[in-house]
Image (cartoon, rainbow, N blue to C red):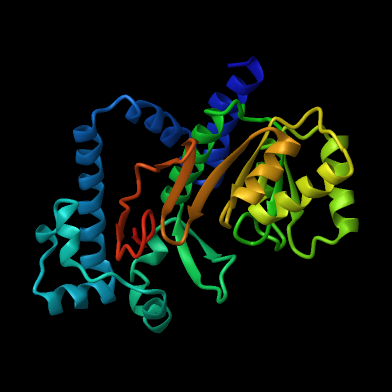
Amino acid sequence: MSLKEKILLEMVLPAGDMLMNTHTHRYYHLIRRMNGWSRAEVRRWQEERLQELIRHHHAHTPYYRDLFGRLGLEPEDIRTLEDLQKITPITKEEIYANFDALTPVNLASIRHKKAVTGGSVSTLKYYLDLKSWSFSTAMKIYSWKTCGYRYGDRFANLGGTSLFSVNTRSWKHSLYYRLKSSIQLSAMNMSEEVVISYIDIIRKHRVKYIYGYAAAIFLLARYANANNIKFSSVKGCFATSEVLTEEYRNEIEKAFGYVMDCYGARDGGIHAYEIDRGRYHVGYNSIAETVNEFEKDTGTLLV
């Protein structure tokens, strides 16, 4: 670890957590420790957190208190991962119809932020507690580092509202993005002129990594490959929000050398990273199950 990264990770990041009421530094080191745990230890930790969540919902969330009543369940009936099968999965349509009942009555006492989904046919507003935000952010830092990224490396953030806020930010948020060395570029309406301007920005600022929508990174790569444009500073890309097709992957790797497929749904509380080609590492703070398989390696993801 370089001196710069050590200062940013161990001094600046904790200071940022104090300023933003987040816990990224603590969770980053928790994730590093958990990587050395046994499967049984990880499961025990997950089930303890699950029980806390169930007790919270039963006490403070009208929708789940009513659901438990209809199903004849008490909080102590949900103690293991297998016990989750006793609870009816909730759909996006049900969230729309029951948003107020799904909002905890003690929301004011929970540190959270308002958010909205991106990349969907219809957007969905939701509240994201800062502990969940912190854990997923720590997971991103750890996962990116497995391919050579060093915290503080300059990266281009090529996305929309699901990756960064397009609204006016407070000075704290502006400082946060500056310390991360993030250059934010909109992935909307990427004409050839816009692609050329982004390539110039990436080369001028010697961007080391590109993070963003798979299709947007593909458009950059395709133009660069067609025009024999080289990037001496870029070490790799992190594609998210859309399916990384083989066509996308091949074009991006030809232009930038490396691409990690990333899956993220903050509204669903899950993040996963293709640390090993073809295998996705899901964050420890998520419980994921695939059901309704209709062909090999496909199905409905329950989180």
